[in-house]
Length: 451
Figure 1 (tube, one colour):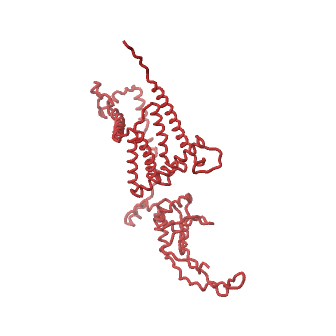
Figure 2 (cartoon, one colour):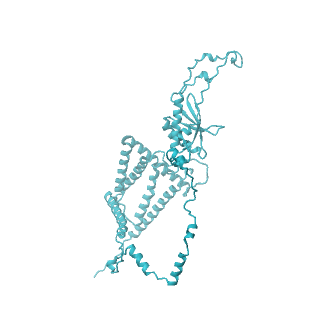
Figure 3 (cartoon, one colour):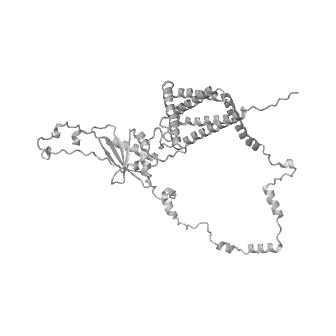
């Protein structure tokens, strides 16, 4: 019989060691990518930054600074998919698993990175910064999102990029939308079942046994009178000597003692009544009521808060510009004295200024006071100063009212007074606050009045 010696194949150990070495190399490269991006600092030297600093804050040094700047500036947060890809390849090589369809998987990973960067740029605004000086989708994602949004708008671009990411995941690995949906539904059912168990257990708690089930005697219901009679019947009888002493103590109180004690029911002395006077008046005088007995009712009623707030308001008349007489006017000349400046009479005389009615100003003050009352701010309107452009209401808040609280009501006052904008500021030299409200009829300030 011929025996054939079986020898193990010589290429398997070398192949396993080669895969293991390649897996470790990919694992180290992925760790370098991840550490460099996590420790990215915008002031480190890179493709976009030129600095004279010798200290590099990146954990992987100058190489990591350049690598992190290239990845994050190009792809944004989607660049973190690159170390994930390297870790996946390293795990497959360490287990000596063959890589099937490498071209399709490579295209799929490129689609995940690019479409993911574009999707992040679509979902987040351009000024949204999630990393120091890094946009969510990077430069490539911003360009891709801009082109798609111009054609499909935001919702359409997000749907297209999301579909590309899902298809790329299906091309890279064993990703299935149905499997993921089923797993999510099972997890939801499991969570609901765990939530229902404590409720069912609480409903199944046994109640204490009743008297009928245990055979214990039922309590007897006794009427109130019967119970009192029974308790008095059960009370121990006092001896005869104690009963005789009680009777003697009662009999010792004679009628004279009872009549001698004063009645404390009423301490008011009796009022003498003149019968003849009552007959002459034709009857007794009416009994004074509580209101008449206390005197005239108080006529002072709590004043209206709005009226109280406007009680000190006064409208200040607009100052008229005093015209200088011809004798007082001095002709302005140039420093050299060669020519004279033109006189003010060359300018057109402005029309008479529009005077706001007193009722209109007070109506605005009432609206202002009503809004202050609505927000619980108390005080007094001291002076109303109308002007050509704005009207200033001087308001003095009561003690305890903060200035910042009044300033925070600018928008609400604009709505109440139907004004475009309102300015609130302190008036120098006074303990009041100036509230400038634009006039409904604004006037142009002529240049003649300014000069």
